[in-house]
Length: 232
Image 1 (cartoon, rainbow, N blue to C red):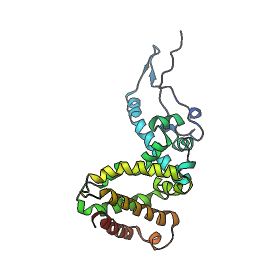
Image 2: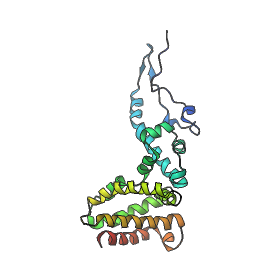
Image 3: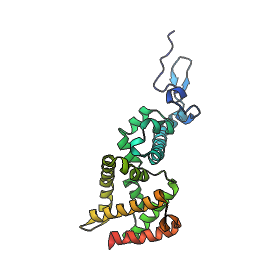
Image 4: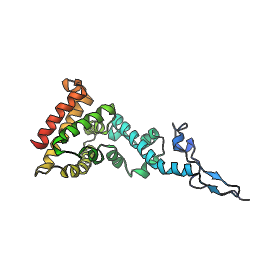
């Protein structure tokens, strides 16, 4: 009898995933149960796991991308390095994100983060923005794509400009939905420039009172300056 042909759910070994993934069982596909007639029947738990896997893998890719971009900068970071860190294949990264630029933009805080911060009273928007920014940057331990964008601007100005513009367009629409003023674009650009400056001083240079300030004090001072920019 001719052996049954393996399906697309065939077991993926550590060799096919590339180096550094021999012990990563989270990216192994189960062939399921093979019946006596040679027909594969899927275990319900396996099916459930397969549904969740794409989200878990995408999250792993984004986490690896944030770390890689922050450490190496946009120009030096490669898709293969990101895939290796995430424990997946190069092709899987490209399946989720069509290019390195799209992966970088997806890994950057943007409308998705703003969508969680902006809802609420407009009067307290500066406090929410300041708190979210400081919490994100403090927990990132230097592995934030904003750091990569700032560092990359010195070595590849064109790439940094294109990335910044793409992220700006994605975020601007969110701010326009809550800020009712004619110069909203100018205000948001000022806000972005202010946050970039804080990130450069505190999280890259690490020099002076701003870098040494306790996070809770930074939130208070940052909220005051953002309030002036948004509503002043």
